[in-house]
Amino acid sequence: MTSRSKELMSRNELEAALREIGATRYHSLHPFQTLLQEGRLTRPQVQAWALNRYYYQANIPVKDSIILARLGSVELRREWRQRILDHDGSETERGGIEKWIALTDGVGLDRAYVESGEGILAGTRFAVDAYVHFVRDRSLLEAIASSLTELFSPSVIGVRTKGMLAHYDFISKETLAYFDKRPVQAKRDSDFALTYCLDHADTREKQDQVVEALRFKCQVLWAQLDALYFSYVDPALTPPDAWRPGEAETGREAA
Ligand SMILES: O=C(O)c1cc(C(=O)O)c2c(n1)C(=O)C(=O)c1cc(C(=O)O)[nH]c1-2
Image (cartoon, protein in one colour):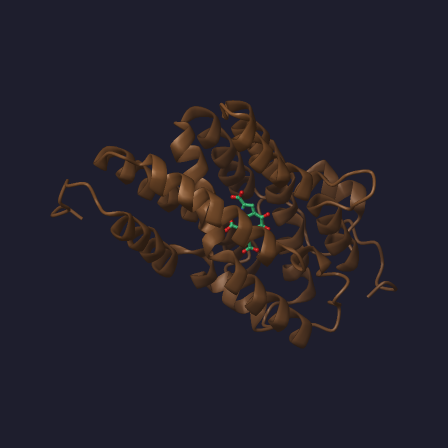
């Protein structure tokens, strides 16, 4: 990295640098992800994942609303507002947050408890809050670039849902309905964000900022899985205020 030339990268070089980050730093490479998709977690460990990830889901439209407010044209806002609709839904269509609640319902967690955010890990909260603050505090270009992890999500979503359905008897297709539309939405969103970044990163400094924003976002995702691994897998040292296996159970009859 020290020998990095400071010349402007071509569009192809910048895109390759971004894809390289995905190939080496995306959360698909995290050991917790591997355990999850290979069926090597217990039901409480899967519950811990679903509970903590709710906080990420719930904050995605918050961070997108911040970006929306910073966009200076009708065309850009029209494009970006779709993301908020996808997660918040409408009178006639369930959004992603509601579908994530169906997922936590499906694994037997009490809805009010999940929505309260009580019992999530500090690592989850710090990582997700850092993402929201990043899009508020950094340039618009960096804020948009930080969503580029979605370039890499369709493949990990496919592997994860297939693995979970094959390996866990308490997981059904309905439970994982959240993921049905995500690959198509993620492709649409990340294609747009990538084009925006390639068009607007017109100095080497801005190109480096785009690369760093993606690296930061990979860390946001990675840190969430670190927190789960340390607290529920090994050494399973669940912190004092966090959810403990058996808590907020709605009973197993739904499974
Ligand atoms: O299941 C996944 O692995 C995964 C990853 C990501 C991502 O790469 O940030 C998102 C999602 N899912 C997702 O469902 C989602 O709505 C989403 C929004 C964003 C974003 O940064 O705007 N990332 C992601």
